[in-house]
Amino acid sequence: MASTYSSLKIELIGTGDQAGTWGATTNTNLGTALEEAITGSANVTFASSNAAIALTDTNATQTARNLRLNLVGTITNVQTLFVPAIEKQYLVTNGLSNSIIISNGTNAAPTGTTFTLPAGRSTIVFNDAVNIVDVVTFRSEEHTSEL
Image 1: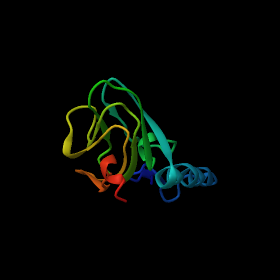
Image 2: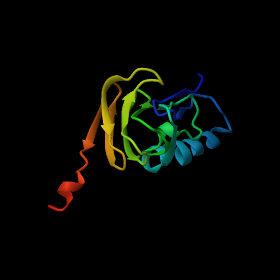
Image 3: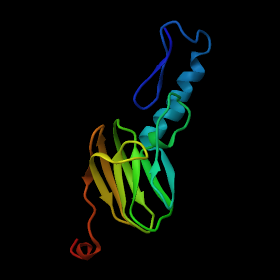
């Protein structure tokens, strides 16, 4: 039976496959794939256009698998970050000069409910594979003095 991949692209070794070599796959699953999903941080670079991150069938490092996404680069107007349509939580820091729309899909039209993150803000969003919803609502600066 051939290996398959989970939604986070962790390699699921088929019964009887990789005899004598499965240890390397298991170590990559644990030391790369799971660590990225639990504690990983990656930059997503924008260059005056939308950005799309995707997952492919490999347990090697992948930006879209990381827990934290740090948005960097240059934009002159609102752009969209497209994420894979899987159930996943992201911590997103918008280090750009404009708001970012977070959406499911590829680098085309947004699908499902989207979430807009203002410039200079961070939040936690949950992707239910259809919609992006904020888990923690950021506070505006005008209200922070009340805390």
